[in-house]
Image (cartoon, rainbow over all chains, first blue to last red; front, side, top):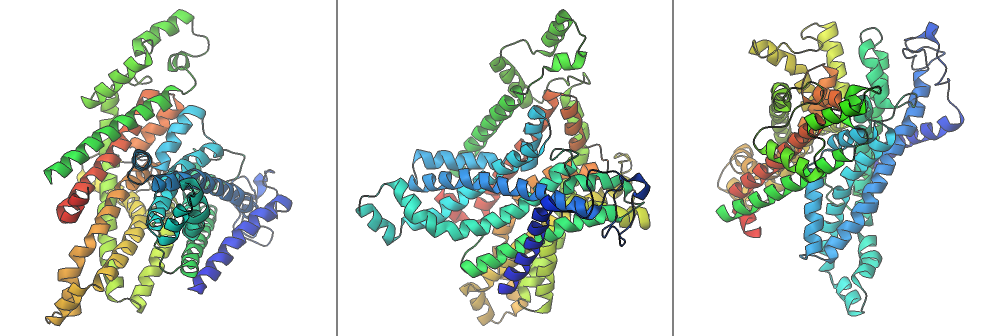
Length: 271
Length: 314
């Protein structure tokens, strides 16, 4: 359905544009405190109101979008960068020890939810956005490894791969030149979904204090700060949450739309 | 079936062993010595050395690993560096909040998802299907801890039906369950959305099968065919997701506990991190991973019991 694609694309674009714009301009300053104007509900000077330090919530959301997008994007990059070659190698070695090792390794990583990985990393290095990236990235690796292994396995049985083998091409070259381009659509769709899951995971990690640290604004951190003020000024809790919902909703719709547009037969795993 | 179960059991043991080595190694490379952290910067060398030896930190790493892993097998998780009490006691106490919470959420999510998935699949393409699908689309996009805050705002602060947080203990089970209700709803709803989608698509696949047409040809109404032949067959993928969800619920419980100030495993682990109580971190993480691996093992077995083809494949 193109409706999903357009709506999801537009929603995602709004957040990406806001994040990019925040490098050049924000309606207010996110570092200046204005205690006299704290917890003000949305009004003309501050469209989305102010937080407990009197900072403009819209500006905080714009700068926070940078953190969310950067963390989720790099985590998808790590997942794809490591997971796809592993999955392709496993498929090229189907039935062999390497395949077994990669598959079992993936099962093992799946036993560690990203929150648990983040807890372990934080126990060692202390909290920070980088740790959130690593934790979500590690969790993404087996997702992409499994997906690309499964898709590559069915391709290895096809005639055009057989032809490439008859030509004397090595497994690595076949994987890179013939398999990868054929599973690219699948990877893009799954990438969109992991990106949206990454936004949610980043928010959760920053909420419990394992992600981006103050003064770097992040959506999860804004919600953690808002928690004790929810009865005084509900908008400080409602607005950042809505931002997360719309961003994730946009990415999910985009993923669905892309899947339908690229190949209606594709089945995407929503882990 | 026995051979399959044994094979899976061996792989379960190997996974647990490898996971324990990974967790131990990761925590061991952590900078900062717990003994010097506990005694502060002005502590004398010999006092630190004495505490190190008391905590068992002066023996080689492999011996410590064996002592820790062996202890976990017998239920002895070591002694907390900070509180000097057995970690197993601390964990057991907290577990009585986190585990019931995750189970409560699992039951709620199943109770919401099954009827929703069934309704959507049986009325595919109609308004009720589209309504369910739109609701699930929104459900998967909502962060559970934010949803928890909204629940607090509406049901605790405005309506005053529930308390905004805390846990009264299990002495009064009704009050205890009441305290876990909002957290369980917050945890359950996003998972229910995923489960309902899986249930719907699984049922739709099944409804296109020949045996459903045969059942209809025999004179069964669409509802009867769906109920008698469709649901049971559609349950297999749903079971898998349900197993996977348990680990997400347990991990999610750690975050939700923060919203409701519940003294569960989440609170324990975050305190332990700030106090560098590494043995507690190690043990709780191992316990969480153990739960995930064992639940997946149980799901695999249940799966093989339901579908004989899977036993042969393995």
